[in-house]
Amino acid sequence: MLNYLWGFMIVIGIIVGVLNGRIDEVSTVSLNSAKEAITLCITMLGVMSLWTGIMQVAKAAGITDAFTKALNPILRLLFPDIPKEHIVNEYIASNMIANILGLGWAATPMGLKAMGELRKLNQGKDTASCDMCTFLIINISSLQLIPVNIIAYRSQYGSVSPTEILGAALVATAISTIAGVLFSTVARKLSRNT
Image (cartoon, rainbow, N blue to C red):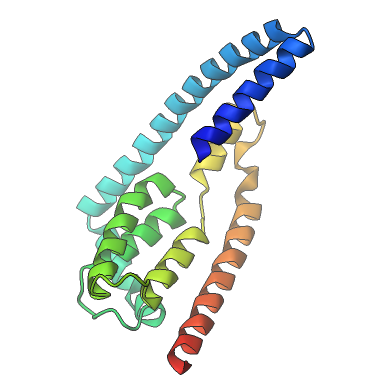
């Protein structure tokens, strides 16, 4: 569907450019945008490599294990149906840590593994379990201490102070996470009462 949408917008842009007699500007902007996209990808690749490497060092140093243990009480509260020593706890904790550090791309593999394990615990049913829904909500609404992607975008596009977004991002993601946790808690209780 998205491919059709993009194709439609490109065709409309070209037609409007021809009708307005500004097709040369459309060509110039298209080429400049392609160049800009490649530059942005290279910048983001560098940022992602840096933080993924830091995550690997933290894992090798046992820092992520310590954070996982520290998160265990929160995980028990948010996911009461998951067995205490199950591997999915580690995947969820790693996903949450990566998201908190603003490493959405690094969090994705752990999130996929966590969802796979949650599906196994759900015995492969077609309907998502409360734990699966809770994990998805928390993953999407994630609290972020360092919004790395936004800082990189702001830096790429010439912001004088790319990190000035930190305070606003922290408040916004804290509110979204609190709202997500409240919603999933209420939804879990309602589902048990029905």
